[in-house]
Image (tube, rainbow, N blue to C red; front, side):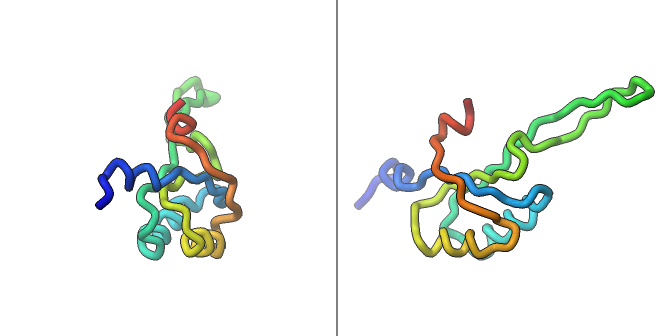
Length: 102
């Protein structure tokens, strides 16, 4: 019987390129059709812009535009399901949890 720690270690973070502005559609697809993906991460930051009138506008913007981070155990089925989605453009590679939060 495997412990939760061993199970967690099998699930690695993977980076996929996706069409900008399509995160909600991609996330809904993953949640519905690819249950093997444990977590979907699309980090955002609050960007401030000053208008011509001197007003400061705050807007939520992606930290890594066009990239989504998925945690799952490597599996050919998962890779093909993700790769076949029209708004997911390509597999970039693996990353560590330290890469995500540093």
